[in-house]
Length: 280
Ligand code: 13P
Ligand code: ZN
Image 1 (cartoon, rainbow, N blue to C red):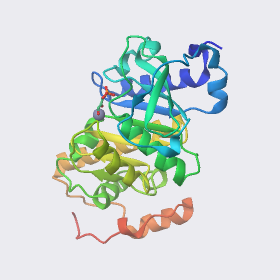
Image 2 (image 1 turned 135 degrees about the vertical axis):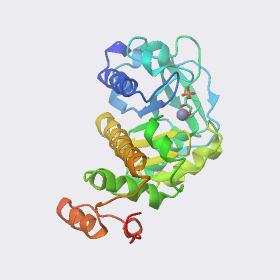
Image 3 (image 1 turned 180 degrees about the vertical axis):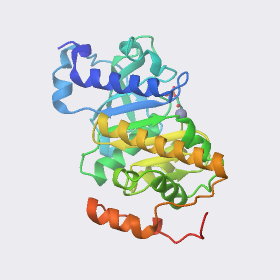
């Protein structure tokens, strides 16, 4: 099968375009990666270039040895993914040690995979181990409201999780484990990848202060949906803070979160259900 006829490539491009439509991907902002199944690689194998050379990933992901990923290119615009997929994306294979990658298809302009490849792969690795391979998608975007909040809220997992949960009843059901926060760091390298992957061991989403958001999920719908839910909650919180300076006349209280958790059969960590002084 021709690579561009593959169902998974079509779904990947469609999700990238959805992110562009949301306004989360100015210029080359954001990146997306997907861990392919054996079947998805086999059906297009005859059109892949197997004799390319390996390049350093910039970190070590031994548990991903031999895995294949679909990933956006560095400097590529999400705006163009749907119309120019072979220039915007690539398929890579990880070597036996988990330290190098080889491009098997795509990036016909001769570029590299995303500069955030170390973070994507380290996130894939922790999720592969923690969830026995259930998650396949890692998504990084630059949604404006969640970024705005990193200037006005303390950069603490407990604060971001609780404030976002309060903004929409479905939030604790969609991300019951909460959301992690990485302080400002230089992007594109191993250090930020290590910090993010550490948080991804317990959360499916991690905010990068003054930069954006990383989400992990089983498939394109759930991962996009997680990004969308978090950014929508962030937008509501930005409106609340803009209207009242953050004063809430009423909100969802810890005992109400507990009742919700019971009925929706999710478990909400106690560290997010702390008592707050009234109206803060
Ligand atoms: P890339 O173009 O290298 O994917 O970088 C975009 C980005 O969002 C960096 O954090
Ligand atoms: Zn970014």
